[in-house]
Length: 145
Image (cartoon, rainbow, N blue to C red; front, side, top):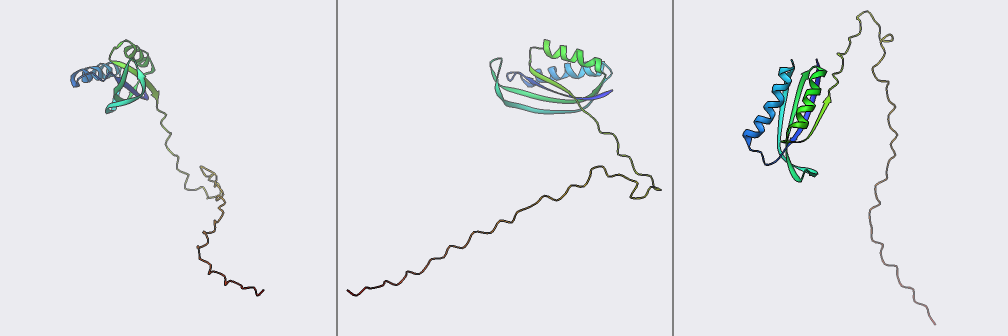
C-alpha cells in the first residue's frame, strides 16, 4: 500500500453533521478498499483564493491514508459525484528510504558523505556608515579694501 494525502474543500453552507457525513463517505470508501486512515486535519472554514461555483469560502479537510492505487480511481469518482465537494486533490507521499549505517569495519575514507561539503559563501564586509559630525563654521575672512 502507498501513502497518500487528500485535501478537499466542502461547501461553506454545510452544518457540522453534513461535514461529518461527507468525510465519513470518504473514509468509508478508503477503508472498504483495504486502506488505513493515518491522520485527519480539519482546517475549518477558510476564504478561497478565488470564487469556485459562486462560493467565496470553503471548509477544508485533509486526510492522510494508505491505500492501493486502485482505490484512488474510486475516490476520484466519489469526489466528482459528491455535490458538497467544491475541489479536491490527491497526492502520493514519497517515504524516504531508511538511512543505511556504514559498516563498522569501514574506515572514514571508504564511506562517502551523503552530500558533498559546500564551500562557505563569500561575504563582503559592509563598512558602517560614517558618523554624522557637524563641521564647525569656518571663520569669515574680511578683506580690506
